[in-house]
Length: 139
Ligand SMILES: [Zn+2]
Image (tube, rainbow, N blue to C red; front, side, top):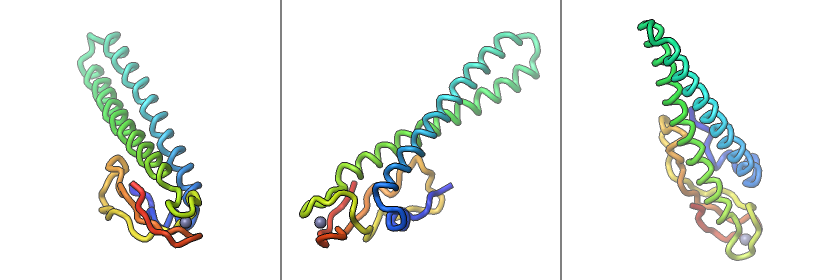
């Protein structure tokens, strides 16, 4: 699943709200990673208790493996989204008039349709200040 075009999203909501949503979204992935970890540990626990039954063992192992994979992906997304949100927020102030987050997106790193969120693309966007017209790059 890929989010909408970043330039479009910032144009529609404004940078501040985009940034806040990125924080919320990345932390949702953190919670997912944490819940997966609990599921994973519960899976190991159950495996231990049911050592005698081979089929059950396989099923529980499958769940634990899925939980482990989910945890890893969710963790990757959390770190990628949070790092990008912070990076963009750091340079969101206009270098000339220092208006924060008041810009239009001119261009962004191309994002392929099958790029997962954990790829963190776009890693950069070119923006133009709405107040003074200065152009600079985030990321
Ligand atoms: Zn400016």
